[in-house]
Amino acid sequence: MIQIPQQIVDGIIQQALAELPNEACGLLAGRENVVEKQYAMTNIDNSFEHFSFDPAEQFQVLRSARGLDLKITANYHSHPNTPSRPSQEDIRLAFDPDIFYLIVSLAAEIPVLKAFEIQNGVSTEVSIQITSEKYKHEI
Ligand SMILES: [Zn+2]
Image (cartoon, rainbow, N blue to C red; front, side, top):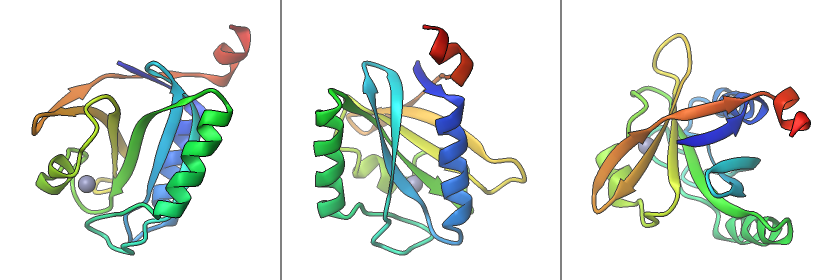
């Protein structure tokens, strides 16, 4: 299970819509499986069927997260035209078994966000618990 604030879920979907027709991508930082921060990133592939992070930007994000005492908990990207499950390429390129992989699909009328763990070439869907900002402030 991964916990994501509503505001960040909305942010991922907004970015995915804004970057159509290309895939959008980014990183999520937090503690354990609780996401606290979204980093929208540039898809340097400029493609509707794959993405790559900008290495320099990725370095900045890692440094920023470390400065906030957060770890990268997930990466995310959009599928403009296909369902929200990892493609063969997504699975092949999923090098980190310790993070979650989120995919937002824009293929249907309503965006669909799903989370996966990818280990040894096998992807397993994990549930997403959406927390509201209000709840977060009450903790
Ligand atoms: Zn993909």
